[in-house]
Every structure is written in structure tokens, then in C-alpha cells.
Length: 366
Image (cartoon, rainbow, N blue to C red):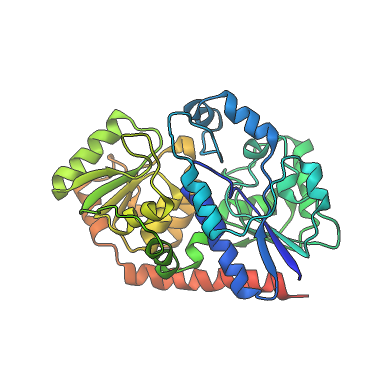
């Protein structure tokens, strides 16, 4: 049977978005190409594992200024929730810990993306892997919603030349952010398409199916939920003010007071049942939009705002990025509670169609 391999950060043990975008892309491609076996390439480099074992989650995040896949935080005791999700919902190939093992893979096509697979800080010393340099010439190379994670290119000429060479062997290229499309054009002379993050390719039914297949007995009262990695005093005060204004309880949906992650289905359901979501997380915003929930974005420049600005501006929702200098908190609360989701989802549906057409063309066009 012909095979399509997907290469991304599906192996993350600290990132709901990483596993859910892998699942979303997997099922979309299965729908478009039912005659192919579709699986995630299980590349987990040993050098990354060694590095993550030596330093704490907080320090690693400060080094990268970004949520890095499978960062090991010894304080959180149940990272296996992500492995349980992978076992239940993902098609995954055998584990590969050295890039030379990738040379033995036999796929008719490989699709890299989504997530920040093209951000060199995220993938050193395996930058070439995520530009599919290991795949032979008979393999069709496709990028779906790949992200550079930055607004502007800031790397030396040597690396730029290498990446330009790698990209010249791709059949189809798309980026998750407008800035990525611009980088492809100005730095590499390539016309890339702008597409949605894989999670946004589907309506809520796909994710409600995950929720409904859960055996969880978790109770969901009306609450203000927040998902923020680096909590600070200012953010805590903001959350408390929102809770007071809306007469709601507060729930942390990153991990709870006992330092345990929610099951992936419970995390989704927490968003689905929330009164308002306050977050600096790109994928938390994605699912807020999918479930048509009120939300406020608390900007965190250290984690990167490019992807959030790109998404929100495309849907006319950039006014929900919190800035106390622009308007009052009550104004943000009121605007979040009155999002015109009928209009938002009409626009989103057009973007879904465009993104799905890109995938179909990339896979089927000779």
C-alpha cells in the first residue's frame, strides 16, 4: 500500500496543540487520500532528549522563548496523558532516534508541518531533517502550514543558502503565517501558499468525538479558564478581575494545583464548557474559535505573537488581544462575550476550503 508520512512535533509531552494538530492533519489527509496509508514519522532525536533531561522546563523555555516539544518537567507527574492520546488517536511509525535511520524510510510522499518545524532554534542540530533533506528524489515533498516562528528572517547566509537548496526540492509549499509566505518569497525566491493550522481544518464535531469517547467523570461548572505557561502577578490580578466581573470560578487548564496535566479530552472539554478563556496559547485560541467561545488573548511576546496576529487578523478578531493602554478590561470582556461567530465561521469556512484544496492538489496533482 502506498504511504504518506507526516513529520511534525507529535511526540510532545507538554503541548496539547502539538498532538492535536498532528491528529487533525492525519484525518484530513486520510479523507483526501483514502488509498494511502497515513502515519506520523516517529522521529525523536536523542540529542534533544539528552538536552531536555539536563535542564528544567522553565529554563528551557527561557532559552528558546517558545514551547519546545517534549520538554521534561520533573514536577509534573502525568505526562503519559499525551502518550495515551497518541496510542488512541494517532497512526505512528516505529521510533527513530537518529536521522540516519530516516534514510531507510519508504514513502511516496512526506508532508512536513504544522507547527514551528522551520524555526532553526527548535530543531538544531536536525534543521535539515525538517526540510526533508533525507528523502530521496522519488518522494514528493510537501509542506503544510509550516512555520518559521518569526516575523523576519535573522539567520546567516550559510544557513539561508542550505535551506534555499532544500526547499527547491519541494513540490508544494504552504505556511501557517503570512510572515512565512513573505520569508519564502524574499529569502528563498519561492511562492508559498497561506493556509490554516491543521486544527482549524475541522469543525467542532471532530473534537467533540474525542470528548465523547472519553471515560472522564470530570465536572465542568461555569468558569473562567486560563492557559498560560509563565504565570505572573499581573496576569493573576487580571484573571481575578475577570472572575469577579463575571461572577465565575477560575480554572487553570494547563495543569492543576497538583502539578498534573488534564487528559487531552478533558482539556478540550474545559475549553468547550468555559464561560471565557484567557490565554497566550495559539492552539487554545484555535479551539476557542472552533467551539465558538468568548476569549481574550493575553500577549506574551517571549513566546511569539506572529502566529496569533496572523490568525486573528484573518478572522477580524485582533481586537481581542489585551492591551490595557487601548481600552478597559470591561470592554474586552464585553467584546469577547459578543463575538459574531456567525460571521467569523463564514470566513473560517472559506479559509478551510482553500486550505483543503491546497492539500488535495499537493497530493493528487501530477
